Length: 382
Image (spheres, rainbow, N blue to C red):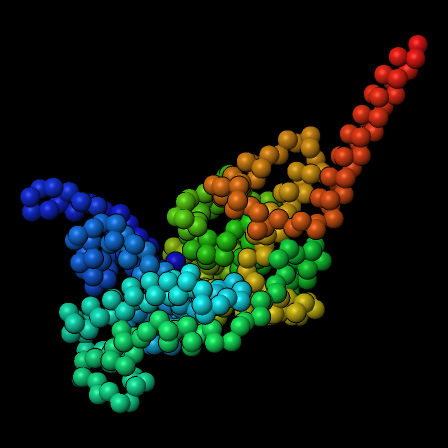
């Protein structure tokens, strides 16, 4: 992710200290944004923290689509809030207090930020008006756009019609994995797909730096795990081969032409973006296209299915090889979860391998108990 948060300490005029939260743009504090957060933190550092993390989510959403906050439109805000309250495609009601309060909170923070830009900064930026009845000032990019939006407008704009729940392939079969992998055309794309099959989240993969790969240990140290928790991913030999092939060939070619690069995955296509970090939208499109060429409906493809598939691989191994003593706690450690509830959405309750293994264990136990009962009866009769 381009934007991150770092906790810091500010020394007040009376030499007392207080906690503050800074938003970093590629590791560098962003003055305009942090000045606004500082204003929100004056009375309560907790308020500043909440505003910082809320705005962080909005900024990274915009960046995913290549949009700067100073270029955002009303439509972008609507789409962001829609993603927040219905990102999983579930149907929800306009009367839901949760939906309304969530939309109201996010919209309130965003409106406050843009009002600050409007009132306290002379940015000289100009947003296209959608409300032609208003006359924008020369330096305004907010009138009729963002800070006068209402929660009702957001809800009606986005959820006036119930949405059908989207269906995805949640767990890849071995055939589907092979079909997608064989239709990916570059070493980079094959490596990214293989890392997803190791259970890595797509944001973890795309934010990798070259230094995060430890070839001597065959591991990756993630720096963008969910909840900002760093974790170690142990790679299988096949994945290591794909990764090193990419590093020494396609990536090496870029560095020989443009100099050393910190980011792991770079744009390979000649043009303006050549050698720049690859974007999520590009990778999703590439994987969908590979699936389609492999005879799989591209609409069923998402980037998170590799992580779900890896979870089931571990659960199946746990069921089929009890002699290895693989525990739920160890699976959680491998997948980077801190709570057992995090594993539940990834479990396929209809998986035949796990069900078969469970039944075999039950039958084995019952047969053993029946055998013991028979011996007891024989002893009694004697």
